[in-house]
Length: 254
Figure (cartoon, rainbow, N blue to C red):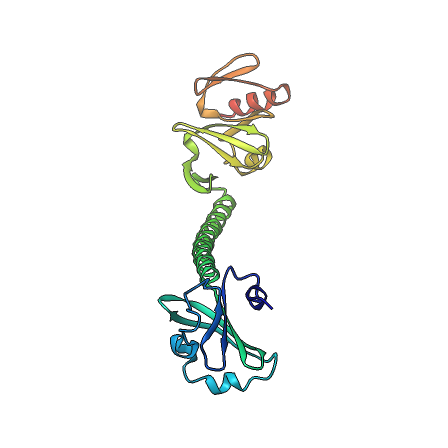
């Protein structure tokens, strides 16, 4: 059995096999981790972890083995985590196998640090998501309350997760935009997630009129009415044939 075979844990990159006799003197060593001089060094005196263990080691039967795992010590000037294996290989011959787990422990430490950073980021995201959820719940509750109040002079427009309080008098017109509606005011344009039918039902009666399947306008904002179009807020909007009568009828009521 050679020294390489005595190092029986191939997944450890740093390992050393030391063969010694009953007197503790080194018979052979591959000196991978530290130098052990043949015939001069004694494993029980040079490796202080084994000091006073002669009786236990020499009591081993053939092929018996002692194991000491995960020992954190400064071994001959090399601070690391070590595993030790002592095995009797013949009547008066023993082998001490030393396994240095520094690389593995360093990687474990790096992985733990990465895990800690991920946990911190995850908790931060959880807090942010909770905050956004709470804000959305408040926005939805206020929006629902305002939507149910048909007599209000103001409306809360929910746009980009913000609630914008808009006076109905400042709204020029609404334009259908797929599953959304564009709301044009004196100041700016907002995009809200809603349907024109719902908008029409929630508007103050007599203040707005639908002139086209895609447009609802505020009557007071209309500048001119042509044959099939109106001029409002510096824009020409079409009048749908089925909506012209309603437009003219509401204007007559003013």
